[in-house]
Length: 430
Image (cartoon, rainbow, N blue to C red; front, side, top):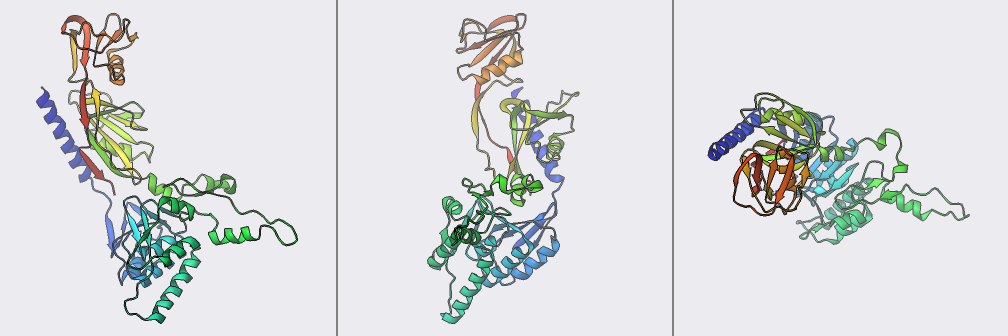
């Protein structure tokens, strides 16, 4: 019995993965190190070195994605001149720039990042001096002049420029999250430029004693969270509208699939689907409202809902016939394996069986419930290793020890065991 259930579970997951991936994802088009996915035409990605033809490649990707709002960066750097040209296009198009966790934007790539109208670094941002292998001092000075001119137009914080020009070309200064917050490197749309803020502070009190208007207040957010203007500084629709980076961070990018795991509770909808892949697609179609799902893969369940869509992960529970999925955003780490005590409703429940003795209390833990509620109560109690439910009295007895099982008319008994869960697969949705 157990072997057959295990084989069915494995086959159901393999079929699920095959059918879900066979549906196909939107095509990705590449232009040198840049790419755009037809499913998300508002996002341009940079992955790789900025070569001598990168500026032209960027113009080509802009033509392919004319409505792009966000530029996602992951690059070791490259040719300074190309990076400055790209940065100028980013600035002109008012694109947001974002460095996700696990990604890095170093050297010349930093110029592009700093050009963002909105910008956020969750990964690594690294800067240093430019290198000049030719030894031509005049050429180096011209390059520095170009860099300063461009970065000043982007209202780059003075502290960032100071760190950049103090770091030798063979070294790399990677800003800590504390420095990111302190130097106001992250920026939301409408946040006043650091240079403007300094000027306002310097002229806060005029020579004749008349006070000028105070600067727009800026809230420095915790590490990993973009800084925001104070609520009173926002007005109308801008207060409710998500920024380009916030929209990107909420977008599901991966799906973690589990076998034998039921995500119990927090249902927002239930329906009948042909398979787990269709259940997953139904969840994805809810524009972010659905965060997880559980599909009942029991072939005997010919009627009623078998797909349960959830507003959160719910409560983890073991169930041999369940296939569950959790959707992860770019900000979420890959889930790790975990262990918990389970009482599988398909494999670990025994009818007409009593476990005398070993009760956690001299009174029933619950009265008037069901065997299912008794099972869940035992799972939730770390002291409980088994339970017996007396159906005619609707009594739930939680047990801290397992005695010798005997026949018990109308009783349901369950025994807890430790089980480890890990994703059977993590499917990319990009």
